[in-house]
Length: 201
Image (cartoon, rainbow, N blue to C red; front, side, top):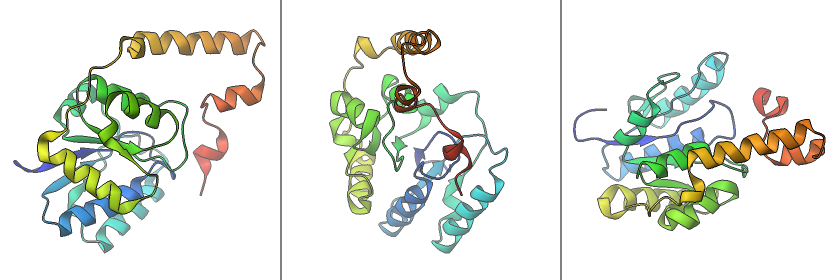
């Protein structure tokens, strides 16, 4: 992004339902309002060329293709988080937990995300100003513009949400699954991606 330009970050898998189209519409709304902003969407491009092509065409139609970058996998995400002005979490469907949201909040970066699932729970505890009604384009614009204006500082990250604690809980869950204490449906409810999510068209 150019010097002086705000930076938005939408990390995660480049698949439908992760909110990339909402991000592009947000870029158009911010651009129309005179906000100088650029968005980066880190994530593997392997096998996702068709989808990314659709997003680029959408951005071109809305006049914001030059404000959007798909850099592929980044090995320096902590530094990328720290350089962002706002991190976005715009999954269409609620997810049990959002590691990217937790990581961004842990380094003190404002997160604006849809108020459902794990994202909603995290933001209510740490940064309620970032909550947006899922799919509400106008509220998303208002919340992001508010965060970019500089008055938004996430609260202290709770100790029980440390990365180590999250990993411990994840390992415990997997151990229960392996030992047969959880049914397959409960595993799916815990947020494990399925083939339908990965290959949705």
